[in-house]
Each structure stands twice: as C-alpha cells, then as structure tokens.
Image (tube, rainbow, N blue to C red; front, side, top):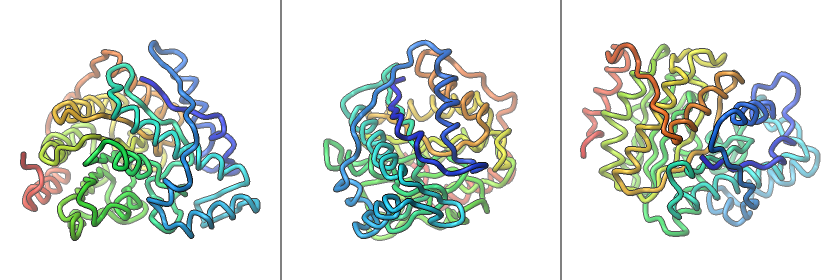
Length: 336
C-alpha cells in the first residue's frame, strides 16, 4: 500500500497517559518497516476552504485560534496544543490525498492509506469531540465530490460510532455512510433507526452490535447489509474510516475482532469497491493497544500484497448480531 504520512502529526501533544498519542503512529511505522511493498507519501496540507466546506467556518476559525493561543482541553477528552493546528491541516490533507489517488486509479499495492492524527470521525459540523477536531474522512469525501466523484460511500469499522461523519452527511443523498460499532459505547449514537433524512433518507446504515461481536459478525454485516447497499448505491469512491479498537485485545472495547479479521474486512471492502468500479482509500481512526493496532493495520497492508487472511473457525453469527442484521434487513437495507 501507499501510506500518506507527515511528521508534523507527531507534534500534536495530548499529554501523558492519553490513549490517542503520537506513539500510535510510531508503532505503526515500526511495524510497517518489516513488510514488503510499503511506500510513503507526504502530501500537502488541506486548504482551510476545503475544511470549511465540511465544517462551520466560524468553528474552524475557533479551533485555529484555540490552538494558536496555546490550546488546552477543548473538552474532557479532546486536547490541543499550539502544534495541533498544523497537525490538523496535515491530517486532513492526508485524507484528501488518499481520496484523490483512489479516484485517479491507484489500487492493488498502490491503494492509499492516510496515517494522520488527530483522528476525525467524531468531529461534528460545528464542534470537536472524542479526540477529533476536523472530520478527515468527510474532508476526503468533500474533495472527491468537488472533483470527479458523483457519489461516495464511507464505511466506518471503528468500534465507536462515527457520529460526526453521520452528522455531516445525514441529509445528503450523494454520500452513503455505514458504521459497524459497539452499542452503548461512546458517544452513544448510531441506532438502527438513524437512517438519514431528506435527500439522505436511507443513506445512513448503523450496525450497533452488542459487546462480544466477533470477526464473523463483522463480516456478516458487510456481506448481508452494507455490501449489497453500497453496490446498489454505486459510488465512485469508497472510503474506510479504519479504526482498530474493536480488536479483542484493545483496552477500550469489548468486541472480539482479530487481526486476521481486519484483513478479511479489508478484502471484503476491496471486493465491494471493485464490484462498483470505485476507487478505494483508507483513513486512520482509532486503535489504542499499540501491538494490536500495528498487527491489524499491517494485516490490512498484506491483503493488498496478495496475502489471504485466515478465516474464523466458526461461520455462525451470534444471536445478538443476528437480531441487529434482521432489523436492518426489515428496514429495507441490503437489497441489490
């Protein structure tokens, strides 16, 4: 894969013991050093005008001023320092680059993956939250729509619901947003009944799985609901909000996805994009056990270097996950 990466993203200092630290990127880089076919690209910052096309302009200016005045705690979880604003611009620029390269035809071993921080999928149109200031994957989608794409699908497999991404595109018919997440976990949004409104009706798909959902359950969400819905939507670009905190050994969730499972998910999403003749790009979100974050992400990389991940021992979907999928199918999702 081709990884977008900027050293300035390391300068976003969240303080001691904060789970979203620069050590995450350092661990990923160390892990990727052991693998064949890794390439790094350092794209330009995102332009503030592009960010303001996604977020309220006054809010964007407020974040810039907050950082430039020294930062501090925006809320209990979301921390900034003076160096955070350059990191925000770089992280958004990495996501923009990933979308542009995918639309330009980069695939296979050249599939783009944006390794930026701070992450983005909790940032709503006019506020920061959940470690996130600018919604990077939405900046990528906006750049695509301003370019060669008529429709964009965003698949968010982070263990937390991508409330910010949903908020930004909830009434937009040109973006389909699908999220698989742990029910009841922060930020408490992402119910099955949240399906979009106006032009965006039935363009939001939430799969709020109960704690304990595993790789088989996640694959079923793609196979039975998200994949068919995305194929019917026929996007020009598929973006993945790639968080890895649903791993069975991540400290902040109770899900049971394996490192091999993330490779299988990546393969499913790649097939989905191929079926739509769509570009495919990945944008980093969460993942807070450094070892499992690295193992999962490198497994995704290997999938694009002709590795076939191991399948789960059981193909039986859990009872709680099955109930969620049935609800979604009853609502009309999943049809080709």
